[in-house]
Image 1: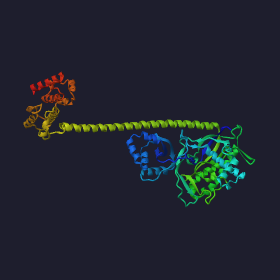
Image 2: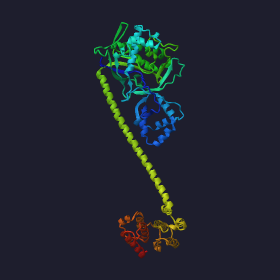
Image 3: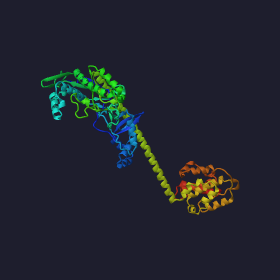
Image 4: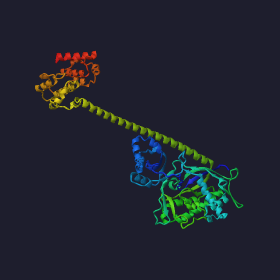
Length: 576
C-alpha cells in the first residue's frame, strides 16, 4: 500500500460536516462588505482585551443581559480585525433575521448557526477522509449483505448486528477497511458559505417543517454554477504488500477482491439507486419544483460518469436512505423519511464526485492554495494593521479631545476661583464691552463696590485705557466728564489727563497706546526700543500703569526697570 493515488473531489451540492459546536452571537457577527453579508467567527477574547472603554464594557457585561451584550458586540466589534474566519451568506433571510433580532432587546431568538469542520491552522473547510471512507463502507456492507446473505435486517440486537459485520469485515483491529486509506480534503478559505436548512414534507399541505439551525457549507456546483474542487490522496491494499491494490473481504471461505475501478463502480451504483429513489419520491412533485435545476445537474453527473469517477453522498442531511443498506429498511410505521432537508429550501445536501487525477494536478492545487492563503494572510494582516493604526489614531484624538475638555474645565474652574478671590478681574476681562460714556459712568465710576480696587494697577490701568476709548469715540465731550474722571483717578496711582480744547474730537487711539497694550511683560517693552520722548501724555499714562504691573516702581526692581520708571515719571511731570 502506498499513498500514490490522487483524487479531485468535486462538491456538486452543499456539503455540511459540522464541527460539533453551535455558534451564537457571542461567537460570531454578521458584517457587510461591498454589498455582501458575511458570517464572521470572532476572536472575542482579543476584542474584549483591546476594547478602549473598559468601564463602558464592564458596565455592559455586569448587566448580564444577553440581548444587550450581543447587540453591543455587533455594534462595536470590527470584523476586519477580530474575525477568525468569514463565510459569505447565500440566503438574505439569515442576515435580515440576525439584524432584526439583534436590534430587538426583547427577542428570545438565540440566532444559532452550525459551523463547519475546519483546519484550525488555515481556517480551510474540511471534508474528512473518514466521511468518504464511511460512505464507501456503507456500499460495501450492502453488497456483502445481498451477496453473502448476512441477513442484517433480522439482527435487531445491536450486538448481533456488530458480530455479523465483524465476520464479514473483521474487527476494529483487523478491519478490511484498514486496506483503504483516504486523506482529508481541504477547501480554500473562500469556499464556504452559510445557508438555511429547511425541511420540506412529501405532502404539499405540510408547510411547517421541523426548525433547524442555519449551517455552514462548502460551496458547490449547484450554488455557484461551477463545482468547488478539493484535492487529496488515498491508498488501497494491504499495508504490508506494496503491490496490493485491492480491497479484500472474506467470510466463511468466501473472498471478494475489488480493484479500485470496481470499488468505485460499486459505490456509484449504490448511490445512484438511492438518488433515483429520492428523485422519484420527492423531486418529481410540483412543490419541489425549485429543485429542478439541481436535479438536472445530478442527472447529468450520473449520466456522464466515467470509469475513474464515482458519486457518493456525505455529511449531515444526507438522509437515512444513503446510510442504510437495501435490505435493512427501518422498522416501525415511519420507515424511510417522509421529508427532505434542503439548503435554502432548494438544494439537496451532500452529493460529491470522486475523480482520480494526476499528481501534477494535485500538487498544483496545493501550491496555488498555499500561495492564495499566504496572500490572503498578508492582505488580512495589512488590513488589520491599518485598522489598528486607524483605531489608535481615533483613540488618540479622543484622548486629546478629552484632555482639551479637561484643560478647558480646569481653566474655567481656575478662572472662577480667580474671580472669586479677585472680583476686579471679571471687570477687567469684560471692560472692552463698555462702549459709551453712560455705560462707563454707571458700571464703573458710580459703583461704590469697585472703590476698594483702585489701588490695583492692572484694574485702574484697564479703566484708564477704556476711558480713553470712550473719550476718543464720543460724539461730544465736556469738562464735567473730565472732572468726574479726575476725581475717580485721584485716589489711584494714576491721574486723568485733561485734553486741551483743540485736542478733543473723534479719533483712533494713538499707535503708542495700541503697542503698549500688546506688551505682555517688561521684556517685550525693552526689546521694542520704544522712544519715551515721542509718546503722548495718554500713552505715557498707560505706560506708567503697565510699568507698575511689571513692578518697575519697586525699590527691589532691577536697574533697567527702575531707570525706565524714573524716565516715564519725569516725562509725565514735565510735559503732562
